[in-house]
Image (cartoon, rainbow, N blue to C red; front, side, top):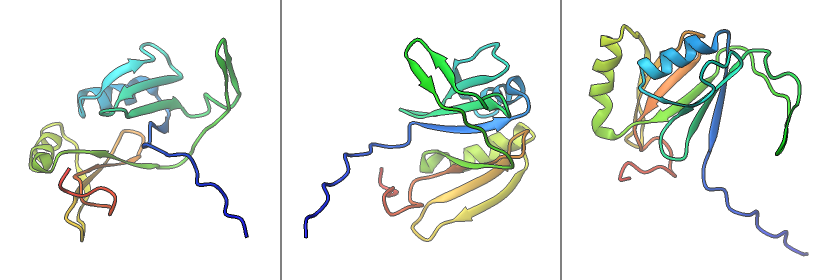
Amino acid sequence: MTTAPAAPPITGVLETAIYVENVARAVAFYRDVLGLRLLAGEGDLRFAALDAGPSSVLLVFRRGGTLQDIVLPGGTIPAHDGHGPLHFALRIPPGAYEAWRSHLAAKGVALTGEMAWPQGGRSLYFSDPDGHAVELATPGIWANDPETD
């Protein structure tokens, strides 16, 4: 029996995408409440890219705005879309947990949940203006993400 060659390495998740009714409103929330920096899409009603930390990008697309392939000089981006409340987590340092709780309260953002994970990580949950479940998580939630980093 021959063994299939191992897959080439994956080094992380580069982008996470959410789909919203109003891109400008979503950008304002992520910029003004979470402090994410706009990378691309200023003034674009269809798309924005926000800096979500080292080597991570949060893509914000207008719901229904990417139902057709997009052909650019460098190639083709396949059509995509999403509906309903999505979930994603942004990494925070362990020592920033309480500061984030206070910051969200000061910005008028209500928590929808909290979790203390068996491996030592902690999570704060809240909703963005489109109802997406946003999680701020310290390391130590998953076995491949030890709290020591």
